[in-house]
Image (cartoon, rainbow, N blue to C red; front, side, top):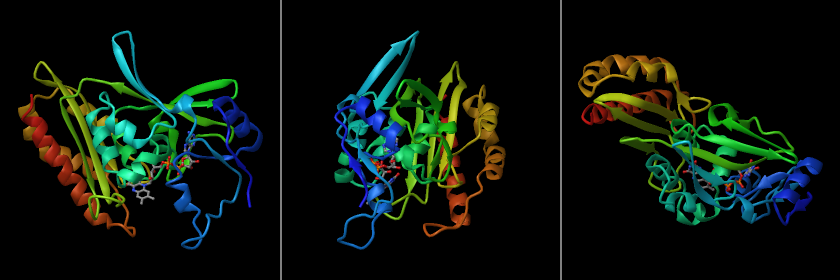
Length: 287
Ligand SMILES: Cc1cc2nc3c(=O)[nH]c(=O)nc-3n(C[C@H](O)[C@H](O)[C@H](O)COP(=O)(O)OP(=O)(O)OC[C@H]3O[C@@H](n4cnc5c(N)ncnc54)[C@H](O)[C@@H]3O)c2cc1C
């Protein structure tokens, strides 16, 4: 038996974190599996847990506008279903969220839980890297914001301290005309990714103005190369088309997957590059 807590509000939740370091349980869809023992028996948690899924202060999604930039702020207990249904959710994030598990599970599971679980196969993470999401972290008396690329430090690892909670995820709402999220799994629902791909890009005056390309489940964390993206900025659609082979060669050096129970390294690399090629061809037609 371990202690369990059910705080009445966020303030109490933060003080329980500070005092006991109790592990947050939001939807429980990762934790109930991670700590399961035998089928039909209760999960065997090792340390105290704190239920947070009911906390209303974090159950929101809102759009904020400041200095001509807009941001979608997704509260720490917002469910995957609410993220998918929100009219301002960027299309790649919506697609990524709808690829997770199945409807019943998405009604309970949270976006924050998907990120904090920090699985290399976490589907929303691939999209959130491409969207330059920022994670809002709070503890009693202080608050910090960390880019998602720095929040996740390895498989199952984040920078979150025992006294802290993730209270929101900020997603900048940027112009993006060529969008793609693709997940490759064994079936449409309730299947973890063999790999995933996200591409977002926008043209200005016929030239690529912004671009982000990310690959999930092909490394310990999501793979994104800002250096290689820089090489694509400023190109026209026809220039992209002529450079596709060279771009694929560049990316084949940064996509270095492993074999595991879900797929092989050879398959992952081949399919990741195929998805990139498909996206680049689409991009080249959109200028
Ligand atoms: C059948 C099944 C299918 C699945 N399919 C997919 C899939 O296709 N793709 C995919 O990516 N995932 C999948 N998952 C995994 C899971 O559903 C998601 O990762 C989900 O988003 C987790 O959210 P949750 O609220 O249930 O997290 P929880 O299980 O409650 O928590 C997960 C982790 O996040 C931490 N945490 C939660 N909230 C906070 C917070 N506010 N602050 C700090 N830490 C926090 C917890 O302590 C824990 O470490 C599947 C799971 C199951 C059981």
